[in-house]
Amino acid sequence: MDAVADITTRHGYVRMLRIMRTVYAQLSAVLESAACTLGITPRYDALLRAIDADLKALGCIVDVSESRDNEDWSTSEALGATYVMEGSALGSQLLRKRLLERHTETLPHTYFDTIIAAQPTRWRQVVAALNHSEARRDDMLAGALATFAALDAAACSYRTTELCGVDSNA
Image (tube, rainbow, N blue to C red; front, side, top):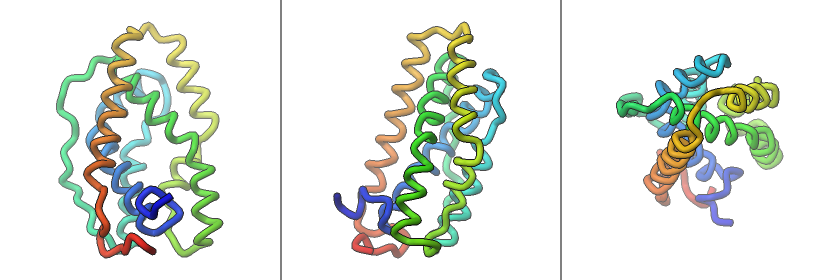
């Protein structure tokens, strides 16, 4: 695995944080609305703040002007986006463990600490609420696919050898 994809490297970790920040910034309003619909505590602005704290601790300039998605998402599409983003949070505990095994306390991990705080009970709440919702499944799938596309686009935009002074070989 190269340093760009391996989040246990400094460069890979910065890249992952930037990708997640981009998508949370784009979709936070959609995700916050879906959280309210599902009856779960909205947390996406808190996750953005946690990512920003980690990026700043790593010496990165954080662009807080990234635009939020202003497209109209149906409730069902927003629920599909929530399914993807909350599902991705499930792996955070393992990722945090791998990061700390390699770097002990040398890399900040506010984002992982924040996202892990409510897992796995949050995931069970999300799945239960989705199973009882009257959301249109086709629209939920469309929202999920749009979210995967946003993650992919963000990942492609951060395929560089240098991110905020972080050597890709570090």
